[in-house]
Structures are given as structure tokens and as C-alpha cells.
Length: 96
Image (cartoon, rainbow, N blue to C red; front, side, top):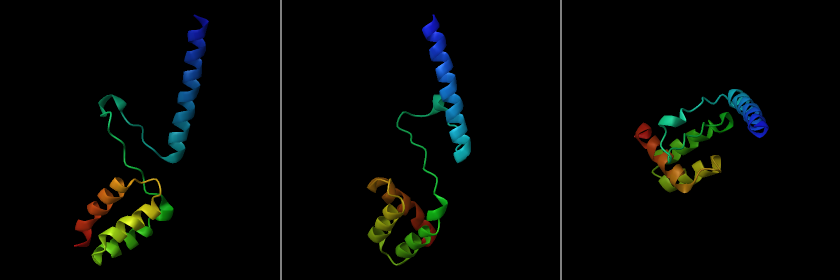
């Protein structure tokens, strides 16, 4: 009985801390009831990398898609090759 109360209090503290972190980072809470297990929300573009996307666009305009993907991965070190390719291809219509 007491163990459950302690766990509930601990879980409440963790949830409050997580809410504070999400609010500080400006991340909206996701409704997990209606989200597929495979869904991963897109990562927000950090402010310091916003200028780098112009370089990606320029490389695409020159027809250097592979270089654009490489540059994207330099700007977003945590992005997988697949994520970088998808992101660069999504930018292609803007260039043409």
C-alpha cells in the first residue's frame, strides 16, 4: 500500500519535471493514444542551423543531390542517412 503511494508521488514528480523541460524547450505534448508505435515526430530545426539550409538548397539547385545530403548530415549530426535523404528530397520542389 505505501509502496504504491511512493511510486505515485515519484511518478508525479517525474511528470512535473518532464512538463517543465518540454515547456522550456517549446515542445508541444504529443497525444500518445493516437500515435502509431513507429511514428517519430520531426526534430525541430535548431536556430543555429537555419542558415545552413540555404547551402543545401544551393547544392540542390546545382544538381548536387549527394553533396546536399552530405551537407544536411553535417548540419544535423543525429540524422540518419534515410532522414537526410528524405529531408533533402522534400526540399527539391522548392528549388525547381
